[in-house]
Length: 434
Image 1 (tube, rainbow, N blue to C red):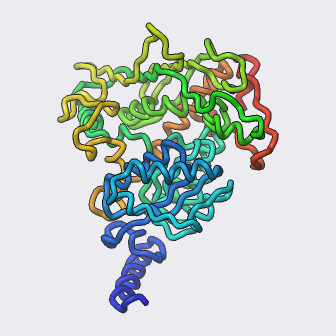
Image 2: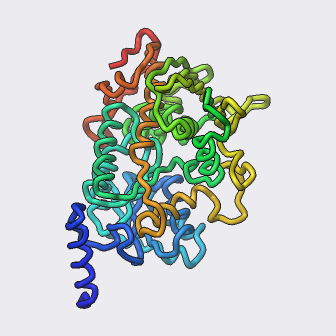
Image 3: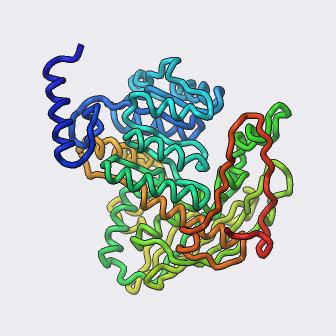
């Protein structure tokens, strides 16, 4: 039975929130600064990234527990549980309290998780699902950790943006998986750039020149098209978005952060130089270069590439901002002496993958600044989609064009054995931007 003290406290917080024009609450931890209660989190998408996000969350705060998991594949969910027990220290592992009835395996499992008593919803599925899942979490008034990117097509990202506006109105905390925003040296350097440390910004550069991401080496004959495309999701545009959206967003987001703006136009080109025309490689490009223009005329040169890890293959994952006084790699003016997000950390609490979850919990509890990156990273996602669509079509794509685009890549039904044809690799001049 709830004590009279707790009843009174909950009633007081509810009246205070309503009086402030906020929203009626059921649990005090849904309001910033309302209490020190242990928070409950649930994960949607139990692959490697989602499982690691749980580890990072439990590492960052000892007053959070995991109480629900959802995935469309039972083996993914069970493997996640196994990895958590193996990788977490005993104290943290004890805070994984996912009862059998809180393990949801289906395409609609996210709805059951969102409807449970979790305070934080962690969205770590492939990005094609992000708009629908984020909208559901916001409508349920949950705080959200949301892996990037925030969609794979203009219709979906605009849906995400609508939910982002609602999350701001409700004062929900939304932390993105664009972890450079939580790397101390990046934070300090971007702040200094914006305050004139390198003079006027004249140009920006973004690079992710790396190696392929291939999740499956072969298709199990028992898998239907939809099962196969989920198992090998990085190879298919509808669920992945292509490299420029799924991966290169990290670098493009840094440039948008520095500029405190999104580009107004882009001209891009790309193709598949090495990816064989085999089922496993799907219908994404392996390189895209783009020339963006910001509202003030400053340009961003962007280049991403995924070639096999062979001898003499060049790699470069970085950002560069050229100012009228000097240039910066966006993390060299920080107090850590230029430690970037891919380096090692003696103290795990300095790792930006952990710091983003520390910031998430502090924002919810009111122990730190309020954070809602939903709209900012949604704009970066749309920036990346602009580049992809320009490369695919051969057209210049403007912000206004992509914000009006009717391109919707999502299937209209979902079933493990559903037949799902793969569109051909886009050919500029043949592919039509809509």
